[in-house]
Image (cartoon, rainbow, N blue to C red; front, side, top):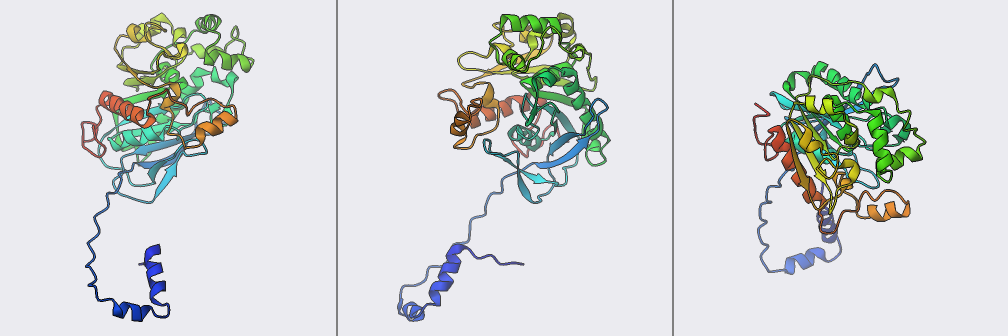
Length: 373
């Protein structure tokens, strides 16, 4: 065993070796107080984390994927997903998974996001009993985000189906998955993706018309700056990529819902949780209320919750202290600027509570629930 001395202990030893120190110690008549036993430290519960590659027939490259899960034992902790802007999330990398039958969540990031950027959410769902599998969608992930490739919605949905194939076949995690409780969860373009995966069919002409009417919306501006011809959107955008293994959907601020076909909306009978952010008003492009696409009212089995005060970007990770200034200097999107009176960590807590309740997970990290028996 290696004994590590605190800096105070080292200073005390050095002081005792100085000339006159022993004489000073002998002349001190005050009794030395007995040391209080140290209070037991509370070890923060952490989720397990690992990475794997997905071979997908529709991709010419491997798709990077990760999994968060309830761990059965502690191993070394490491930060996941941090960068110059966002705080990281601590995880037990490679720890053994807790036994039992667990619900599975397939997670899809937003445009320009990545699989680890939503670690604040993935880790907390894992601590409540779920396995969370996320991927980096090629062409729409951090450092590899192209307007032209963003319109290939079918490819993103297929990424999740391929990740599901891979994890179900995995000898370590496959046996832990409750095949009757597989949820697809997505944010922004990820919300679009999971709706596509659940049977929502997006029509090219409807999306073109939406951008003619709402040309100032962020998605339409993004495509215009990328030279995307909205009269010639890829046919794959309308492909049927429904995965029948998906039993429920969580879509947070989903984009492009004005383009969903009426027939596909009516046929989407599985439970759907829609979550909106926005203060005082939601962005039109991600508004599923009556003032937007009205998707919340048109789906056969949907619940809709608005969480405020927040904006679209509040769903992203916690920002480092200097992040907002750094982004302003770089003339980048204000992803760290929340509305007055908003507390991003508090908003995250409310999101975690709402999603956990919808999925039937434990209310408190580490508790046993119907999700883990």
